[in-house]
Image (cartoon, rainbow, N blue to C red):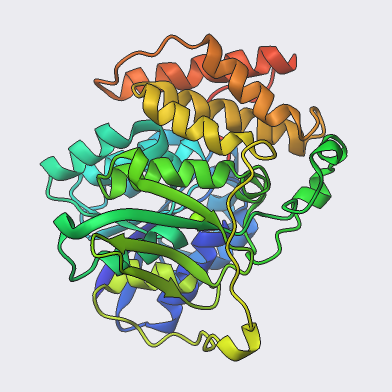
Length: 393
Ligand code: MG
């Protein structure tokens, strides 16, 4: 029996993780859950999966939830402290890190410190603090197993191969809902249009990141740390059908690809059971019906965010954290209709240009860069007041 703690249980990956757990009751159990504010969904999850400890974003939501769960024996905490308590639960062996955005970093690090294996869906953890997180994981003998579909594909394709034979990684990108939209019409894109992802059903932040291709940029950074390869050996190709989840090329020119129906339960289950494969109720991919798989070069003029991610990796130190924080602020501002779609890359570029790169020795270096970049981005967008701080999912 594998006992898991799940960060971000009411989000898209969180819900799919619980679907996998539910399908294999003799195999997985849930020790702890964390969520942001969605206490209605969380209450249902608590009743169904019976975690011992739960944490939510703030004390007010925790109070509401405690009242609703009076008849249950569950401890409900709040804030960073509550999340860290769940992350440190001694009876769990695995932490599934599925919080969206920078807020995932601290609980993930806490789980690493308590020696748990990490099933990582929160790519921002590695974008912000990849070197630090991987160093901490190595020091504690913790493996970080990707849940992101592209990285899960690569993880599967590297299995049983010799590392020294690797030539490059190729991440596939759907291109998002705006792939065919002429550059001149981007300025008038509404949140509704940008949220219409053609192949994957995901949360709003990652769907906007797919529309700007920043999601792929963040994934390049994630791959760099996860698989310890130089950025120059991580390539991106547009593949609108989202059936090839990524590829690995070996030095004999042989390319291996991983294919399947786009369903997050696949990567989640593999992260929890590898190298064993669980019998999931995911339909077979019908290649004859799919007919064609197409690939094209990403248009870097149309999608400048992808290039900014490579720039941030090259600059190193605190720059990827700045890229990530400025992007988060810009994406939420776009979703709130406070800036146009085309301002997202502008806000990021301005923050990166103004940033003095510093080396990352510890978590506080990353958090300082994160705060600096959010502040810089908000000032650039003339947004002041409310929702300060990194925790927003
Ligand atoms: Mg992905």
